[in-house]
Length: 101
Image (cartoon, rainbow, N blue to C red):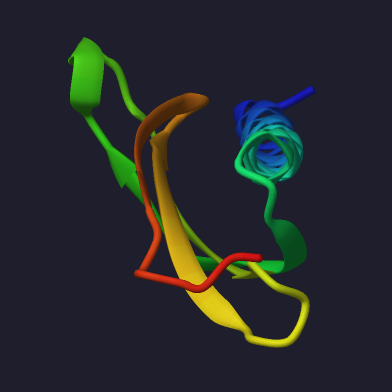
């Protein structure tokens, strides 16, 4: 095995690890938002990642993600909220004013 092959394998392994890390963060966000909406008596309609970038918070590199989600408070209207995370640490969850039953 040459140094080039070793570098390529390590690079491929790093990319695969980061893919799994981002998937894990997305699944964590999904379960967090489902629980958040259930606790606040909201109906979760959809979730989408709006932004992903590398950041160096907490003295280590990790992914800074912003997810946009749609929810309904009364089953008729649709509102957009936002959740911001660094890794699996939730920074903030923002909801606009909305009607509820």
